[in-house]
Image (tube, rainbow, N blue to C red; front, top):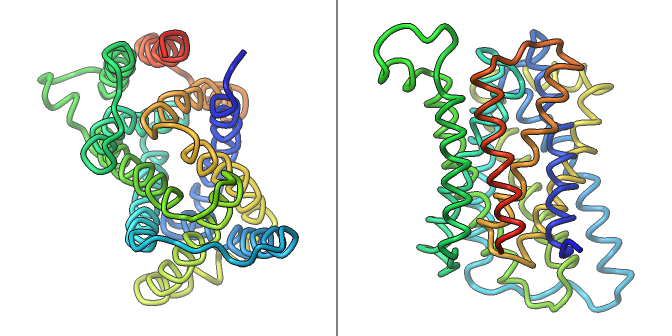
Length: 301
């Protein structure tokens, strides 16, 4: 029987796939990558803040106290998530949906390293072996379509670079969010998760509002015009983020990120059935290796 954090991580990955699917739709001519990224925060922040306030009032214990590192972790994690999401949305314009999602999964190895350096979280030798298998899968996926030219040029293309950068930023996000939730002085995992999520999402909305107002004038108006679709990005975002935050309070961030690779399976289904995109045999092999790493991690840990 799976532990709670595994089930929560799988559900978070499902919500995140839905959110990225909607962001891809909006980035296909309706919004810029920045606008599609902003919609994820703009349409979720009000719901998250209301939910957190309501839950805190219902519990009757008041706003929880936080440690001195809460806001540094929250601010760094929030900024890293903005930039990482921006990179993934940019990948969608060059590669199919499943490959775009899979590129970001380099975050697993990078999360293990960052978690060890920042929080002292340790990964067993079996866990690291499973994670490396997943990384090999990403290398298969990083080869550009057509496969012409020198190996370095084929692997280090724009999509691969964006994928590696997004993976690194998502690794920082995962570790920072785990650090922030551990700074909330309360024993209840859900309260720590929703309180941290409310603080982070509010900060992200303010930051992106300032950026778009400065660099992409008129984009916020387009985000509002696309609200019939964009509001569902916010709803899916709440489900995904709340799942990740709760899982991070319960388990090592590297293990949560590794189980979250099941998102690749969900994205492959969306890519073929919804966007009618083709997946090559090489890409299937890369996806299969990533899936194998998930199974091994769950069985061995």
